[in-house]
Amino acid sequence: MGLLNGAHQHLAERVGDAVRYQVDVAPFITVAPDAGAGVWADVAALAGPGAVVTLTGTVPPPPADWEVVLEAGGVQLLDVALEARPDPEAVRLTAADVPEILDLVERTQPGPFRQRTIELGTYLGIRRDGKLIALAGERLHPPGWTEISAVCTDAEHRGQGLATRLVRAVAHGIRARGEHPFLHAAATNTNAIRLYESIGFELRRRTTFRAVRIPSDALVGDAA
Image (cartoon, rainbow, N blue to C red):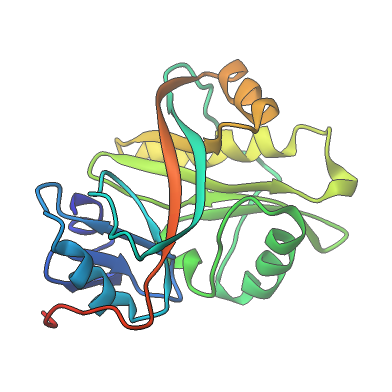
């Protein structure tokens, strides 16, 4: 719950012990660390019967009739020795750039990005001939930390180190606020993990990315 009690509190919606980002910002739902099995009624009230929800943090097992639609291994890596620095070619992206961002994300699949995801923090891009070809930015923001996310490069421009440059530039801004960069990657994305480790990130823990579908007839809790 601390994830949405700080810098992103204004982007949160809450029912009981369940809290989520507004749906056009990010797909994530989290629950209070001490929540019991009854929290799933709060999740159902928050997202609505039939919805698919992406879970973060430690949560109790969902009810047996909730369909698990995604369960995949992941890793969380922390910055321990990254050489962070601004990049002269990187530009700060704004809401006006969201259509191009969504197009690049659709083609490269770095993870979910929605119409208002850009409100989560600073997003930097590199353009060539006016076209957005690489991207990285800030997503989750627990107290004292900021996640680097949406790291992607157009297929025609890979192998030039653009993603690494943008990670360093985003990290530079995070450190300037006195915070610590971290990031997530799919456990199967060994190339990305090796790259992150080679530039100064270190494995902190393994995690699970999980999404579940709420039954259409789910009982829901009371609205907060």
